[in-house]
Image 1 (cartoon, rainbow, N blue to C red):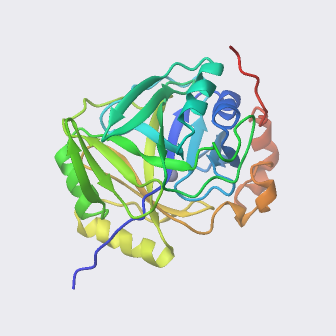
Image 2: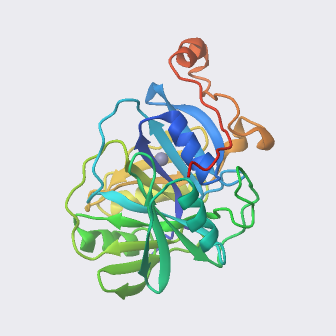
Length: 317
Ligand code: ZN
């Protein structure tokens, strides 16, 4: 019997930016997300690793950043997540258009598959969009002028820019277990089983390769329900002809990575244990959290990081 593997959808998306405080001001201050974890890049402890999501950092809501001061700006293109899609409650579109305007953020309105999207960029040029959908639990987090009933529920999904879209399509359908639900003009649409982080739009023509750096996505992570399923995913990915890394402990989830044929770095991450592993749920993101293997070096690590604060912003226009 063939086992049908199906990821529930996006677990998190990780991108590069330059300035940590500007990053906090945009994702918490403007978009109203919660900073759910302030830690360091485990592979480069001189930089932060910041996680933003809903009230608890649920899978499907988490965007994470490595702020590298003075890093080169990247170019969005093939082999990357091209656009990260956020989903907001039905009826809140005009609230978000007004809010972007209030903060001096230029946006364009565009349509795909009968849906209207507000497309804009963050301060480093990372491409984002907002769409209204009924699906997805309402956020319970209100911050900085974004009430919970207008707040971002999580990812709607993403637009994947592939240098080899037929092969990426094959991977999405036959390895990751998404279902093709539409094709319209230049896009094919795929859907996974969760009610957020579940809609992937794929340009059907190859996209010229991008360049990694500030303002680009580094990888997209997909959900595994637990460690046992995660181990099976690793075997499945390997048997499907990819080259997954060993399973790595990322403190808040376990991870494995592989690069797909269209150039995009995929991760598979476990839903547990989540961000309440080392902080109380009502204090998430407040302290610099270090895994125990870095604790002996806390003093030097902290002295290398510029302090950041989550703060309410005034609109600047
Ligand atoms: Zn990741």
